Image (cartoon, rainbow, N blue to C red; front, side, top):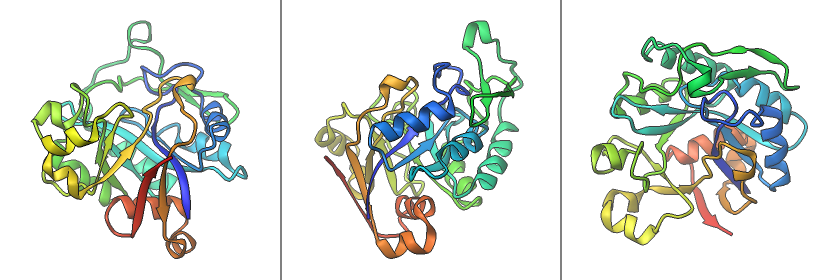
Length: 250
């Protein structure tokens, strides 16, 4: 089963996310772009995942619960969870590792928690644009304890990546890594040999609706895995190295 994916998207819960990135708008734009599977990965929180999954019900679009976690080293790692319940538990655990810094919306931006119809449920008062106390080597074991997986984000970027913070991809068990669409893959493979044995994803990291591109990158999953586990868990299993898959770009 071949699915068009974008596994790194932000909503208006992220302080740097646009107000128009409501969960419902995000789902509808992903459908217009021809995507089959997305992950909502707000900074250090999963609180808009329920609305996105509700908005996607009956559309054929799979929404994988997720988060872009900022580690103690200020490296971004995308975490994917198998269920909404697991995501909310994981989100609460990560929140306890964040510094006690109150958000100032006039400076950092609003952190809106919405329902599937864009109704305001509340705002996250703790600033999400900070680094947690979790180190890079702690992230994968933690997210796996909730049935999920994780991969380092935008490793070709000069900031907020494991390569920028640590100088290399740490050998801590990641089975996949994320490149931006502008990455020179051959150069990245030369610089970071560990990357050769990893699945190489290309996601948008969209913070605005216009940044969600038309479908391009795809992942091919074993039909049997999808039938047994469902698409969300099948994607997680593939990216964690536990199920066969193949990646490509249109």
